[in-house]
Length: 295
Image (cartoon, rainbow, N blue to C red):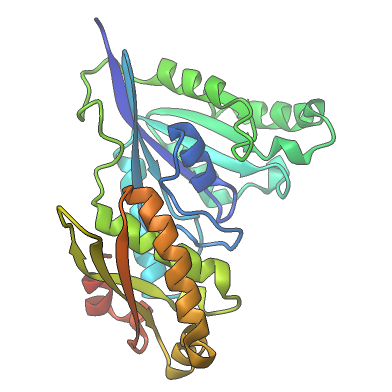
């Protein structure tokens, strides 16, 4: 049986629904999601394998102008992912963007890309009717840089099957790159740290989420009894530490309880989660600290 396989990068501005799209494509939660921009900081690989096709998706950070070193690393992930891809999926938010307002840098990426390109017009559910998207589709089509245009709602999985079929048809003939039962190449430690960080985004506002990183110290799998996980929530200033800890430890307790439930659902086992809050001044602009965090 002839098979198709390839790498597909999902790119776009921050907060256009890229991570929600990846989760919808895979039929499971792999990327953390949050209404706040810049939730995704690294390249998240997710693998969809069907009988005759394997699609290796990469959810990438939203394209932005870097203001500090961590964001420079984030943009490096985008460039690296695009360079390795067979198909490029540009996600545009129908709720926010008109065709002529697409970021010029994104358009340049698409124009210079040597493979196949798809435009996803996401959040079609925000329009009064699906027909309201037709003028936008026409304007994008006139650009002549997309092989396919797919209006959809990643949140409600509207048109998700069509998008998968479109991607399949654009992939090259190839043997599979990974075992058919593999969902991602990333380790469980990574997903655990992401789930904890997601809760920081959910609970806190303003600068706290963007000044926070999560580092797993210990991850002990046990044949009997609860698995043990120890993690540091890293912030940049003592004042931020006090906010994350909260009055009498109420905030760190809330993060721990919510994270534990989510991690147990993900790992499908009971865990004991221990969280600490550490201060690492200016870590977002410190190359050695960023490297230690896995950037």
